[in-house]
Amino acid sequence: MEIRVLKRTQIDILKWDDCIINSFNSLHYAMSWHLDIVSPDWNGIIYGDYEAVMPLPVKYKFGIPVILQPFLTQQLGIFNRKNINAHIAGEFYKKLRTIFPVTYNINLKHDYVPGFNIKHLPNFELKLTEEFENLKEHYTNNTKRNIAKANKHLLKLKHIAVNELSLKFYFDNLRFPFSSKEKQLFTNILTKALNRNKGLWTAVTDKHDNILVIAFFIIHKDRITFIGSSSSKEGYEKSATFFLFDEIIKKYSNSKFILDFEGSQTEGVARFYKGYGGKVIHYGQFKNNASDILLFLKTRNFQYTLKLYL
Picture (cartoon, rainbow, N blue to C red):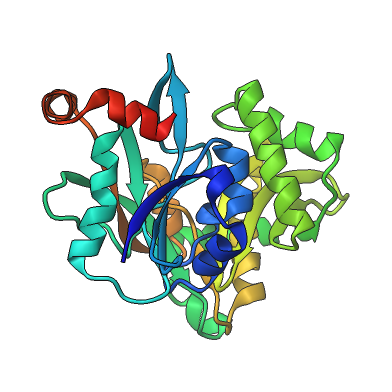
C-alpha cells in the first residue's frame, strides 16, 4: 500500500484520530487536538487507508522545513492498528531524512529502525492493576517516610478550577520557568484536555485549604500521563508532591490504568519516580547530524523536497 505525506489541511482528521485511538501503542501526543496546539503546521505520513500514521511536527525557519519535537510532547513515531513489518516502519522513518534538521522522539513500540542512529531515553511507568496495598509494598523507604511526613500535616487532594489564580500559582512556582509562549501552549493544552474530559487539574492543600502543589495529568485510554506539577516552598517542606502521587496511585489502583511519569534524565527526578515502583521503559530519539545533512544535500533533490513540504 502507498505511503503518503499529507499536510494538515489534507488529512482526514476523523480517520487519523480513529487510527491513533485504536492503535495498540496509542498516546495522546499524536491526537489531532494536541498536535494542532503544539505544532499547527504539522504534516502526517499515512500508510494505506490510515492503517498506520506518523505525525511530522514541521516548522519553517527561513523558508526551510525542519522537524523539532514539540513542547510537552514526549513521544511521536508510528501508530498502527494492525501489525506492520520492519520494512514498512523503515519506509516511514526514511521520510525523516528528507527534512533537516530533525529532532524526533519515537514511541517505545517502534524505537528500533535499521540504519538509524537512535538514542534511548528513559520513561517511567507504573501499572496500577494491583490492589493499593500491594502497590505500596514497592515504594522505597524514602518515599514511605515522606508520605508519612505529609500525612502528619493533614493534607488533602482536590480538583480545582482553571482560573487566573490557579494558573498564576502554577507558573510562579515552577522549578524551571516557562516562557510566555510556553505558558500559552500549556494553558491551551490544559483547557482542551479538560473540555474533552481527558484532563486532571488537581491540587494538594493543607488543612486550611491553602494550595501547596498543583499538578496536571492527561488521561488517554488506559494511560494517566503526568504532564507537570508546581510546588510552593511550603509544599516542598511538607512533602506535598509525595502525597500527591500516593493519592493518585491509591485512587486508580486495581484498574486497567498505567501511570506514566513521563520520565527524566535528571537523577533526582528519576529517583523520585522509582520511589513509587516506576519501571524504566525506553523510547528513542532520532537526530540528524552534520554528516546526515551533507549526505542529504549530495543525494537528494533539494528543490523538489522544498516543493513537497512547503
